[in-house]
Every structure is written in structure tokens, then in C-alpha cells.
Length: 334
Image (cartoon, rainbow, N blue to C red; front, side):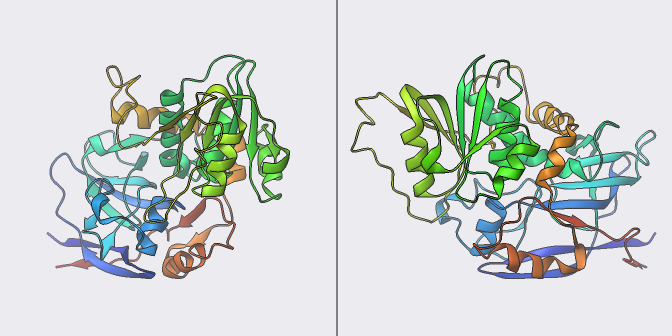
């Protein structure tokens, strides 16, 4: 029996990346062999890994589900992979699936590790599912209500997805807030309002912060109404953060609360598990308006150069989708 090989992106923080060829494990009787069609790069956690900005205390907690290697590196990281099943148990072959797998051209996993992508979700859009899962968990933590006035500070992919989900709730008014005026076009495509920080409306019932900047957190706190809640979605890594808690924070009885996708939100944990939540996230990608979050594709062979470009703070790419060769050209090893 011949062994299969695959190519994968490995990160050597800070700012090192390369494609390596590796031999895949022989699949078991019930395993799936998946050929990747698309993956996507997280501008949050994944770029913090690339920058070498993950605190040592978080090396274990911030492991990706199928990460290889250990921080501070080298590591094979990533968690937004859409592929087609090449071999496996009856009924699986030819299925398009989403998996929390790194950037790799082919891989072997159990069926429990994947979610079937429904026909209503194009394979290329399904790469948003990992970020959508983060947004779903944030809404479960926050519990927005009918008629709420909601602000989302930070129009990256997660902020945009959070705003889009909130806008589906009856009577809700949503402002998506960013310092980049070009994000107004994205907000319009998602059917949500847009404002710059200096023109945003205050007195909000609920504020989500997703900019990963101290200035954005300042804006989020200033927009919250009395006794309102600010949900902190950003992960700052090793970057120092300040919050203006010396003003009216206490007298207005504000609540600043973290949300994190690593665990199912306590409000749903008794009835939902990780796989159910991920399946929900995949299904929510059926909304064609979400195509506005996906920028121009990049090819798999250019991944190291793409990582370097995305590390530049001036780069304004939202979801960077990666397209894989069809079929990949990895040889078999006898």
C-alpha cells in the first residue's frame, strides 16, 4: 500500500512561514481522506501566532484543534478548511465538508471531526464558518433582545458577522463602527448601519468590541448606555491594553465581559456541544450577503507571501481565502 503525502503551511514565529511536504497517516477503516479546496486565514489568533505575540501562559489553551508542533513554534496552525471527501465509509465520498484543520492540501480525520456543508452553502463561502462560530458564541454570551440598540466596534470579519447576526433580530438597530471609511460599503452589503467612532450613537443597550485596540475599547465603553453590557471579543495577545475605567464606568454601572469560542457559552452549554454549534455556524453561511467579507483569492503556493502581507497593519483584507490546486499534485510514496 502506498503512503500519501500532502503540503502544509508551517509557521516559525515571529514572521516565518514555509510550505512543507509531509507523509499522511494511513487512514483507518472509518477515517476520511479529505482533499482541501479552500481555507481561510484568521486575522486574529492566526496572525498573533505568526507575529509571535501569543503569551506563554496561553500556549496550551490557544492550541488549534489539529495543530501540529508546539508554541512558540514551529507550528502548523489554522482552523478554517473546506474540502471534499476522497475516500472513507459509504455515503461520505464526494461530500463537501468543513473541518477545523490547518492549511494543508490533503488530510486524514475521523467523521466526527467534520461538518457536512449543506447544498445551500457554497463551498467557497463555508470558510467563514469558524469565524461565524465565534460570532454565534458571542451572541449566546450576550443574549441580545428584541428592539435592542446594538453597536459593534471593529469591522473585521468577526465584527461584521456579529453585526449581521444581530441585525436579523426583530426591531434591533445595529451600528457597525470602524475608523476605516471604506468599511461603510461592507456594512451596506450586510444591511447594517455604519458610523465612524466620532459620529456613532451612544446610549446602546449592548456593545460588542472586536477591534483588538485600546482605542476601540474606549469607544465601546463610551457608547454603552447606563447599566449596559460590553462584550469583549478581541484577543490582544501580548499587546498591552488600557481601558478608561476612571471616569463614569462605575457610576453608570457598566459591565465589561469576555467571550471566547473555546468553550460553549454557559447559557447553552447544557444543551449544545461543539459539533452542534459548528454545524449551526456552517448553516448560517447560506446568507449570500456574506460574500462581501471575502476578498480576492490567493493560491496555496503563495501562502508564505500572503502571511507576510497580512502582517502589515496597513493591509485591509477581510477574509483572505486560499484556493488549492485541483487535484493536488502530491505523489504517493511506496
